[in-house]
Length: 545
Image 1 (spheres, rainbow, N blue to C red):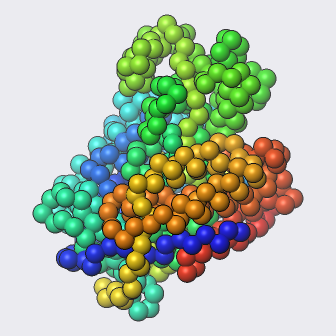
Image 2 (tube, rainbow, N blue to C red):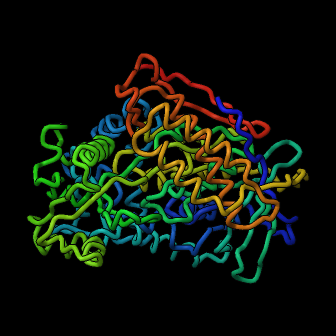
Image 3 (cartoon, rainbow, N blue to C red):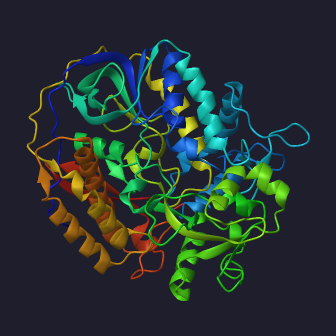
């Protein structure tokens, strides 16, 4: 285990202003917006903080849809079994049961809130299929704009409520604790927008993390670039337990836009394969034909691994997704945004195959919480992608993420009765240094090279050595760039150390030096805390089912 010294609290100016609310929600995706509405149903005031503008979280980028057993012939039990299979032995079965049993009604309530889903010819919610699902259970909107429609509906409800105060362009820095070690607020920096600017403090009787993912720790990701793992990093600094960070799902079909492309990449939804598109090698052969019984609709980790292996074998930088037989109506009605993305780079999917590659997509791990968002820190709740309820195990089943954010955020309300009165935060000494924001590119390059889609001990050890060196490149000048770089280094360090510790291949964690799944030794989850700047990892064994 490395003795890398990580930063336990961010260096920032003293808060120049203070604001109060009953509940502070950090994040404006499906989880954060639903949490805000849950708090309002309890007649609690809400401060909603979002790093960009209200409608630009990862939810808005979601193409495929939301999974729930809504169709004839489907059932929560079948959804349960598909989720367990995708999770490769590490799902918390009790959490999955809550998800699949409560999912259908949660989606219906979302429709009642104003979300408009695509309908079939009979007027029912139209359902399609994605990888790992044995039934058509993916509800979609606007063809391939499901997340945008869900976000639109929830944002409309939130902004219509005068008891929800919204701060956009707000980067949350650290959690605040009172004398009893209960979370009682946050420090934040409002980035030059609105009436309040600079560093301030927001005090609340409960704090809800709904900050999304950590995809920006890699060079290529489907996430927005604001997804720098802030929620996981600040929870870790505050003493919360984190788990499963080694399980980062790489989406198998991301549009290849050139060898030098970095940052956010255009996603080609799994639903395209659900409608009949086929992955092919650059020689035109069916890629998944002899790899898995479900072929192109195998679980996402299986497909991503196959694509990666074919790229290595062929020496070509991509494989092809062949959707030329889908027809013009399917492309125009179901995938208008994907069609536009392809045509922007000169590819017409109606007549040409699409070059695709894997890219970092979804973090199955995060802050340990239960199915109502409760963490091991009093006063702190975590929901959505920044949390780890155990639902996803080692690999998330396609389109379960929107459902999880919705279900858990609704169930959060049970903890909002009888919140203690607002308490005062204890003063903590401000550390002198931050990670220099100018090394962000080195952090992402290092993480991608040694802890990306395929890993081994040599590469992971080299990554840890390099990250340890980068941890010495500090500055005493607080800035958004340095705060984000500090979060990225913290998250990357945890991820890499956990990936080195897990000596097997399972789900979205692939070790070329340990290519097999090992249930005898590794039916475990890797937990971690940050103690005086040092990562302390431990293993929790799961009972065999």
